[in-house]
Image 1 (cartoon, rainbow, N blue to C red):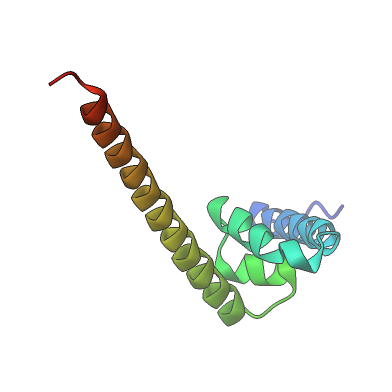
Image 2 (tube, rainbow, N blue to C red):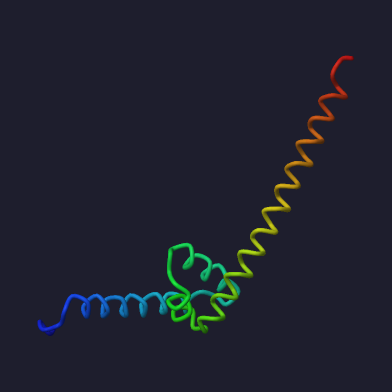
Length: 101
């Protein structure tokens, strides 16, 4: 290793190597699970640029995927919340019907 490299250059080298390792590991993920990988990388705090390089897509594509993933996830949460409210309402009405009057 060249001792003349600054700390910034060394950190840049390390970062590039880590990105390469992540890209290699990401290449082993089936395409059907690619969105889950993008989501996990984003939740890990990585930028669109890094996610794009790791997954092998453009930065814009990474941003679009994350937007769609979050939107879909939000819709899923709304469906779950409404289901829980329905179950809770049904439980309360069943309890009232069985209560002595």
